Length: 424
Image (cartoon, rainbow, N blue to C red):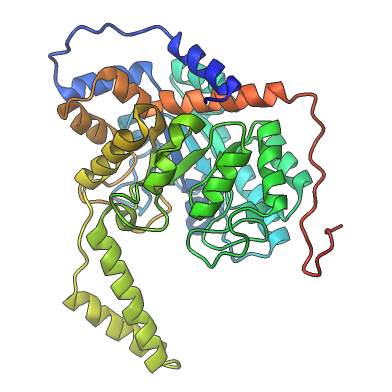
């Protein structure tokens, strides 16, 4: 049974004005251009703030984002390419490394939020901070790019529900529960499990995210954490930048068992473009390279130059395969086939990865993907859902859950300390 608040949000979505259903005989590219004028394309994850921190001293004025940077920098993102890509809204990741101690991670995350706000302020004709689905729709109508904030890794709250609430007040609208490592209250997909999913404190985190209207993002988490979070959350969940394990068997991808639960949950998987997540050959090559690197480090533990040289020779003898746009499309169509058209979106992970699929160089790529789907017979209505309508529906559902809990007291749970007593 679909949850009551979610059902109401779905009905609201169904009440939106419909486009004409007459056949469109124009080119796929022209169809895509028209529909993106009416529907904000919403990308679930872009790491530009971290790229600015690492490469430009956290100064958004140190690089001209108003220029096409494809030839002069390694950045995947700039304003001309965002415009060419038809981007109407972007969840900007305020990522910090999982290796940071929790309190340092919290500080660095607030610094990343500050950096993002300074970036938006530097280009007010292009960007505006969005906090709600209505903000996204309004900003898109006004010709600007709605800028939403997402935390990538629950370690940023330093085991504090008070910090979680402060991040929400600072504008954060989703939190990825883990990143690459298991944390004190949730298991990661790429680390040894410790909690069989969520700990009791992790469940309290999810409930507090519901109460405050913050989306629960399950990219990076283990399958057991996905199951627990979907059980606890009253609002639909998102996967801000994941793909389908049924196509590429990477632990960062979403298994079909979870995809089949999405129609009841109402959530959305936003397909990522990470080559190793979308192409099995690339995944296998990456595993082989990691194995060779580990072997060389074991053989030459005090000779980093030798390790680097021998690894480069191995790469020359074993050239990496390339992912392609067709791989992205295969993952989108798999999620549609298993979960349904209402549960798929796009989350590229631009500026968070070192390589991209062949033929894709940055955030101008979205129309290529939508046009290919149009050539495969996707209707305008389905393309609009993929582009942004599904995410807007999930945002509105989460906002409705938060309104329904406005009188509920904030969670006061504390994590369990190593000795077994509740932390203070």
